[in-house]
Length: 152
Image (spheres, rainbow, N blue to C red):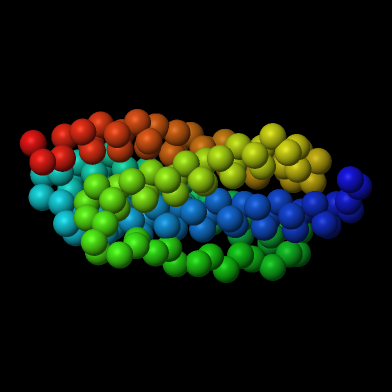
């Protein structure tokens, strides 16, 4: 399917925004998990999960905004993520966060594979996509390790 450069850039920003929104859900769920975990586990979760996801979300938002500004497109409005109901508990919140991170990573991978960042993007955006994926790349593994130790 043929598209104009402007259409491609708008599509790229829309797809990127979906990944950023998923990272917002992950942050909300990790924040909720922090509140119900014991202090030691909460500190570990913050260091190993929350900080990388927070850094990825911040980097992604900056890249989105900068790209939009460079090409005179509207900047994204990102939805505040929902942690889910309190009945999820720590394990449920962590599971929700992992699912959201996986959704964001999959969306970013699909965006990279689409070639839109090459065809209508620029080197800075491509670097940002790779950086964001790198920041969340091992969150799933770290979360699995953390969940295994809950209640011990």
